[in-house]
Length: 152
Image (tube, rainbow, N blue to C red; front, side, top):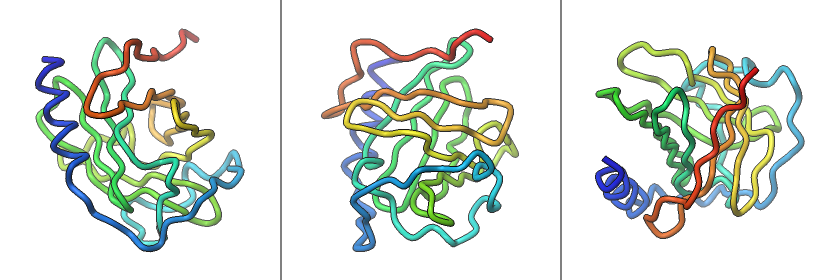
């Protein structure tokens, strides 16, 4: 299964949705931003260079892959048959991710990027998922360790 995920990530990251509206820094988010705008609001202007790439985490024993290319975002969870798609970028002064899932799943619809650097990213989702920490996948390779959601 991991080999298939690596292949899918490699194919996705090879696709370029390119955007000339990229910003070079990530603003400081506010606590209420995760529900600031509906999925697909069209207000997203461009994802910062720091958001670009393939990001991985685990949740409930499943691998979660978040891929951001230009202003486009896609999310895949192992065991689910559909991709969630949407946008990533600056929205109301914050770095946001807005996704729509064809199966109606609302776990990861609106996400506010709390922090991001070359190795990791933390996103607070408005759905029941809450906060997740992702590890960046480089060159189509899975990271050596994947973050897990802390027990609460």
